[in-house]
Amino acid sequence: MGILLAAGRGTRMKSTNPKVLFDVNEEPLCFASYRALFALCDKVLVVVGYRGADVKERLLGRAFEVYGKEAVLAKTYFYTQEEQNGTGHAVKVALEGIGKGLTAHEATFVLNGDLPLVTEQTLSPLLSAMRADSFDSLCLSFEASNPTGFGRIRRDASGHLLSIREEKDASESEKKITEVNGGVYCFKSSILYDALQGLKSDNKQNEFYLTDLLGSSQQPKLKTGALLVENAEDLHGVNTTYELTLVRKLAQDRLKKSLCEEHGLDFSNADSCFVSARAKFKGPAQIGPACSILGNSEIGLNVFLEGHVLVQNSKIEDEAQLLWSSVVKESRVGPRSKIGPMAHLRPGSLLSEEVKVGNFVEIKKSTMAKGSKASHLSYLGDAEIGEEANIGAGTITCNYDGFNKFKTKIGKRSFIGSDSQLVAPIVIGDDAYVGSGTTVTEDVPDGALAISRPDMLIKEGYAQKLAAKRKAQKP
Ligand code: UD1
Ligand code: CA
Image (tube, rainbow, N blue to C red; front, side, top):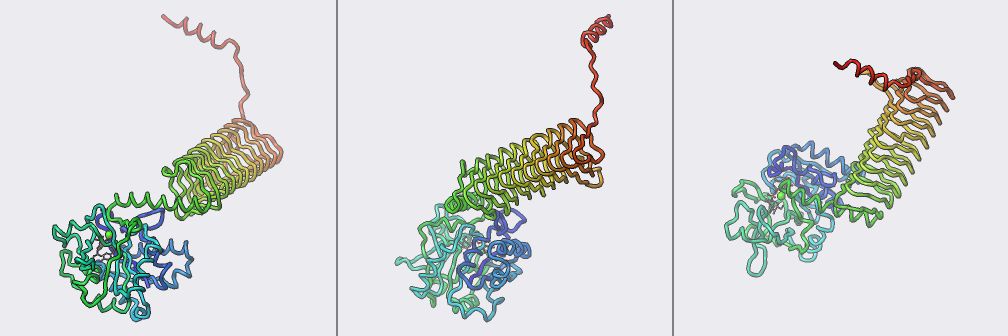
């Protein structure tokens, strides 16, 4: 069984948002602890409190994406700790919630919810030690370069755990101890409930500390210990937003490493890019500097993101190219299509294969069929553009009359001349032409030419005549 502690506010974050919901790789911060417990345990008990409904919703949202709704609901239980009376009290709330379901389990893992780098592997030394040495309770500890804020590991001369002293209760000499508690525990389930009943809150914070279940001075009848971990990166906790920035860097590094190894992603400057843990990759792709791949985006084979490209909740299909500074949100870019530089696909833009969208083109809620092109300076909103159609530079769909939005339909192989305005609702047929500078206000039949342009006038020698007139007017 696993218990995830996620009831605290995280006051040191100085935010009204719960600490456990800050994003790391676009997952809630507490999700790493959940993932580790989900992998190892038949039941995961989550203790929520401060803004508990939000914590539950976000945690479940991500868990459903990763494991599927059924698997998650089959083994996840939420309990509310109304008042945050300490980590020991939080575990008690979970045990009282699960009731008699507890003693059947040989080990209960307890994880703080603020350990975004913890993994299933982090917990494996605990399980082996519990089995081999029949411990009643164990925690992971590490050597901290700055131990401030952590519970200090007090050991006797022979190295046995005496107690864990919280920062606020520690004497000056105890504060000098650099071995600290990592916030990851394993208990023999059969002792846990009774031991919790005996906890007292006679400390500086008037809290029931889970850490008082460890050490011979608090628990003389139990066999307890602290396992010192050599590589403590997994135990990096988050208490302040600065610590969050450090953990985020490490979490991004780990994610990119696994994406490179698994799919052959090729980052030209990985540190400058952000990739969401929610994004999916099919295989190799080339990713230039300062790209962000956000949300549940899907990136196809051999996609090329040139640089400063933002992709959010979008599907980029095989061999598509997104050039400098393009932005693609809630859209699809079909195979071998080429976007940008500086193109903006707003939500609902569905580009089929081999579509070209050039610089300073904005597209919203529109479809572009195979081989169609809008190469320069256009706005296409609520439009349906047929195969091989060519949208000239500066074409604007006038889709909004101040009250409602209207549709524009452009047929196959049609050619829209530069600087045209298409006043929607409007239909331009297949193989039709629109002359440059035309304001199209009526439907254009298949194969027709629409042109609205005053006749051009040339006045020979106009400049000289004007100059002569000005000279004559001078006093
Ligand atoms: C805790 C440990 C400390 C350890 C440190 C490691 C205790 C008493 N202290 O201190 O020894 O070095 O973690 O990071 O456990 N929470 C609840 N209910 C509560 C209080 C906290 O669910 O009433 C949850 C929080 O949401 C958080 C976790 O428990 O996820 C740890 O709480 P936090 O306040 O960060 O504990 P620390 O003071 O860091
Ligand atoms: Ca903490």
